[in-house]
Length: 199
Image (cartoon, rainbow, N blue to C red; front, side):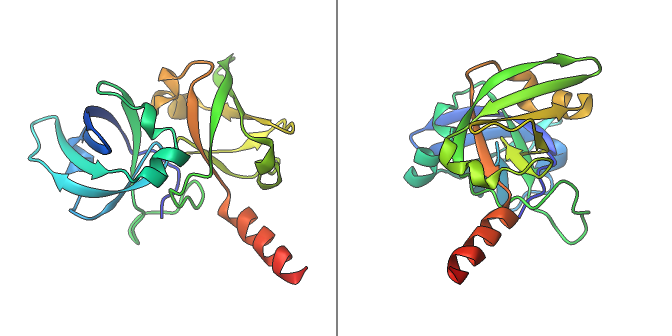
């Protein structure tokens, strides 16, 4: 389980088939363990290998299943691309953000991203069949970032992004048209499941 609060930025070092090798800040590298879960752009992956860290960073490897490749934007990753990273939540960490499982529901697209006074405005488009999961002022994870959607249409939502989030994530690398991983609020999906069982 994750919170959508990005802990560091990684860099794709190698990609071979469905295997990734990612460099990450030493502070995160020191907390990694073999077999642990790590969210990469909001996708829960299992650490399959860890290399020795240097003075600045270490690396980890993870295998990506074909199912994950087909449901996320991870297939677009290439060496040199920066990625959002978050380690699984522990009992020592506060549950900031919101509950994020790392199970991406769909791939959206950045429709707009621009400065609005001291903040940034992000507009994301997504498939219309997921509209029922998006609540005004609810929670949503975009590339693993916990955000609050508003100004909803049938296929888009807008989020205000504070400078700390913009500068501390890969949002600053994003452009109009880029694909993003979207995970809708798990509470909305549970509610839908309960309603369907009642009906």
